[in-house]
Length: 511
Image 1 (cartoon, rainbow, N blue to C red):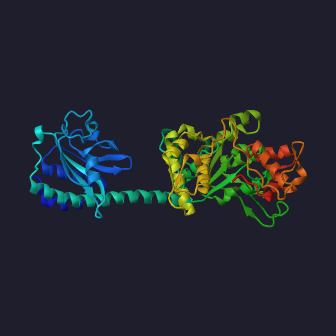
Image 2 (image 1 turned 90 degrees about the vertical axis):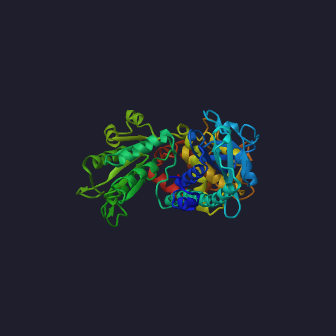
């Protein structure tokens, strides 16, 4: 038995789920009019889009967009805010492309505006007769007026539900942003290449075997390491990170394994190392390819025996850690050159995880851009900003050679330099030419009018301070050797600990 039109409000307000609500709303109206087809349309910035349809071949219509500026019945009703009755074959407002490919065409359309409580029109509902001559629609004045009242009730309920759904999506986005502030891993992307890596990370998380993450610089190796830890049974235990190339060799060993009091000058008390501090958790060793050969043997023992021996100690200690390592180096080449142990490679590479470069996941660019823009505007407390269509196209075509990190930094640059609410294409700096590295950071210019003095085309070095010259020299070395501190120190003719000490005093670090 068909429901009475008087039951309509009860039928409608029993539903809380937005998708179910819009479907029940539409199906009830179609049933009341005893016709075959109906559709719900929402006003979008670029036109009018069908969000729900019922009846034969409804799936052809859902998602269809009538471009703004093109004549259409739904467009006319939305813009004029009034109901209309139209015969598609005779009415010039009918957008016939919407029924392309359908075996049965509409013969008569009854269309009502969807209006919010404040009077704003946000969409339209079409009740469609496909019978010959539109003979099924009840067009009596009393029935149409009664139906219009209930469409008004339903449109408010549906409008509120859609607004709530949008708010829910925005809340979820903010939760993800806030989660990143709290240290949770923001992995953004839906491309097949990225999803393959995510699936592998999820599978690896169920085990305790070592993982070796490879990929170009800026692809998010640490983020994936954190994701594996987050999904693993060790998630409630520490996740500790050590960049192997960031500290001198002598300090690296004590950082990883700890030391006993008196092990060396300055060791005034016992200190536990990273492997022991991460008990039950995960240790992430970044840039593992830069680890000194002597230390590689000790890491091998951790993987083989789950044992460590602090510097200056005589007894070994058992540790319970999972090791995840990462590199952007060619380890096979390093093994051939004798700078990396083959047996350590096979211990680390039990579960290999290769991350795709950004050029291999172009489908993710729009979502990544929106994520970084939303995250950093929220972090900085800035008002909402957006990319103009032209700026977005320019960014989507940009060759991000530095991968996700380069994109992230570019968005931050634009937020810092563009005061307007809309970022235009003209605001975007040009990318570095193909094959050319981005310019190194310049040292601060020395004060005084003689700072730029030159003699015969050669900079006047006497115009610079000693610290400024050393700063420029250290940066140039680091850029040349891609921030490999060991190689830079060797080129400078000093040992790594001395070079690293100078970097700290000069305030230079990779971040």
